[in-house]
Length: 350
Ligand SMILES: [Zn+2]
Image (cartoon, rainbow, N blue to C red; front, side, top):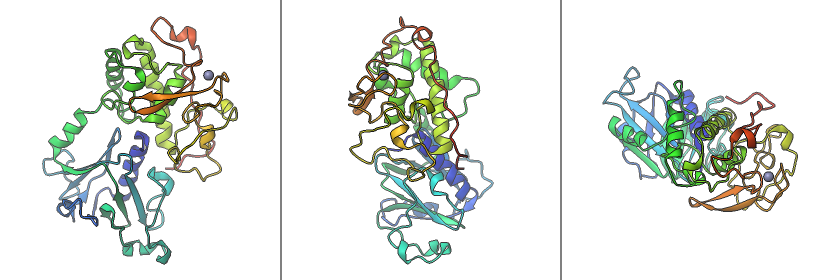
């Protein structure tokens, strides 16, 4: 499942590709027949909140996105959803999309030159096609794809906790996170997967954030100090900003990347955009604990463990992640944490 940074990249890609344009919409699969209501409207832009994407459609480009006439397409990709882009040269950089890599569709081999995207026949599984002046986007396999009015959009937002990738000048979002964690008896590992506590993070960020905080995943939220929660939030903001900028989750400090650079993969689940690019940090060097169960911890050599927590596998180092309660002072136990992320070696895409 894409984590929040990917959805924010998608929103940015939609903005670049379609914002302010009158677009054609259709549902080749037929399961989103409401697409006909949007055909010929203007796509005002795109908005990401957590793992949710909103595409506001209006009769004209100068309509306020909050106006009652605006129709918001609400999309959640879930486990299997993806967007595929095709278009003129420069329309959508595959690395900038965040969704699975650029696929031109089943007739790709028949295409001759970039201008031919207009003749691209959608696959029968395409739930929603949006076509603009310079390219198109095909949505397949989403968990949610629906049209909402302003109230419906707000109702979705009201169910979501703070999103570390949204601007938070007054620190209000951070306070919401800290309070939600500290009033709960639930384990911090489960709280981090609850989209009402924090919106947009998934299994990779959960495991890596807890490692960087040296926190035992099974500690109840209410045992953590406000300072620990604030530090965790700030670390999450930095990690996800890096992900949104580069399209990749990388949580290791450079000095630790070549130590025990291995990973245990049973599926393609940890593949990220740009994995084929020799200049990016490869995924076996990107994580401290995610999919590193049974391997030695990069820092202390203890075997990394895995277990079930909130319906997903959590990975942790039992020695490094020994902070169990408020009595274990953050600064005493972890003078260096949270660690700063270094900028990527190459200029980030987008
Ligand atoms: Zn360790």
